[in-house]
Amino acid sequence: MHYSKSTQHGGGGQVVQLRLTKGSASFDNEIMNSKKTWLGALLFACALVVFTLTSPVLFARDRSEDAAASERYLQLFQYVFGFVRDNYVDEIEPSLLYKGAMKGMLEAIEDPYTSYIDTDSILGRNLQDTTTGAFGGVGLSITKPFVSSMEKPAYVEVAAPIEDTPGWKAGIEPGDLILEIDGTSTPEITMENVLDLLRGPVGTDVAVLLRRGKALEYTVTLTRALIEVPTVKYAMMENGIGYLRIIEFTPLTPGRVQEALDSFSKEGYTSLLIDLRNNPGGLITSVVDVADKFIDSGVIVSTQSRISYENREFLAKSGKSIVPAGFPIVVLINKGSASASEILAGALKDYHLGYLVGETTYGKGSVQQVIDLMNNDAMKMTMARYYTPSGANIDKQGIPPDHAVLIPELTEEEEKALSELLNTTIIADYVAGNKNLSHKVAASYARELKKKYPVELRLLTRLIMQEYYRTHITPLYDLEFDIQLKAAVEILLEGNLGALIKATSTVRELQETAEKTVAAATIGE
Image (tube, rainbow, N blue to C red; front, top):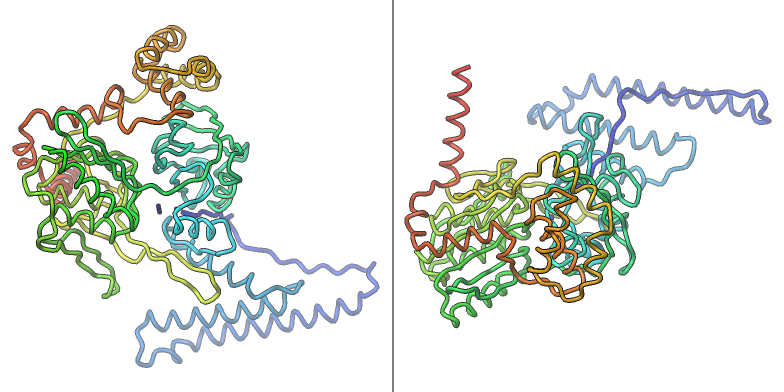
């Protein structure tokens, strides 16, 4: 899973005041020290001026203008580092200045995927936990803007809940905003603070205030659990459909996908449904290995950067594909499908091997690397952008579905009613008194709730079943309430998928069409 950091900066410069107080026994010493400090500051300022004026001459030889500027700023940084270290009122550890400079430098780029990672911090421990594949928390993949303002507070946004975790079982969805964590407002704190608040000992509770849509706000209490990074789940559905849910792309994912396909083959599957919804991504090598099982030859994904060695093409290996061309494949996507899951969806779409159903994906088309530093710390930095086989970069755009199935948006009246309902224990109390709850019974109770809380019946029934599955085994899929899954199955059963796929456009063709539409509209204005 990929995470972001944010620090709010105040405007204006800093004012340094030197105050002399007669009441001090060391008044004369303070005056002498003050004179020395001002003398040092004057010499330092002169050195900066001289250096700034002469640096073009010093560095212009055999160097570009950018290189000269870089050298100049490095020298300036060294002067400031040394001056602060030697002249600040209290003695300062050099490591403190180093960490502050690293954080500030990488945050100045304003890329939510580029950050400094102190291994002693919660962010550093999070990276280690993710690498080992298990950690304690609530199971939410989250992002956070860098800058917070009155017009646009930097709330934490849920990118995707991790399946079978407390957050997922509580019904938290991609796009939900976390306004508060245990009473702490999120806009004014850093991502590191957010992670520190969400994590804790297994079995302890954390309360989060959520906002969905414009007006629906409610608090949910999550019990922290051991979060194991999942990979793949699969099962045979009726009518010969193999259902393959890829939850995240880890080193284990290609092997698990192979197990699923082998199982489907033994059971004689006649079509495949790949569910990438809420898949936050993962390793590019992992998704390439998975795509190679479907694509016989050609580029799966390419990366482009201003650094030559980051310009790469990941090619399908001839003879490695195990799913024959033309095999009926539907791919489920939504706004929680990001990064590596978009690579797979884009590749299958561009080669006309799969039909996309659902919602436009998240739109993360960049590639990060974690670079170890000499002090047992690290930095995560965006090194390149990736492109689908047709040459499309989907960063901040996403991949639109071939067949859109949108989750119905709540009306203002429904948001208000649902907010009132979710801030009660009515559903929890009902479920606690019904140990063996069925969909039929839940639907019946939903009709009763609807009389007081005018919300769509399907949504009320789903909320009841979500509460039930907090303490019971969650089914792999639910055709009763999952309208996107239901639509995908119907498309597979119609029997004309080949013609539908053939008529689709590549990702790049869709982008070109959109660009032409915008250009035409601009001319029309």
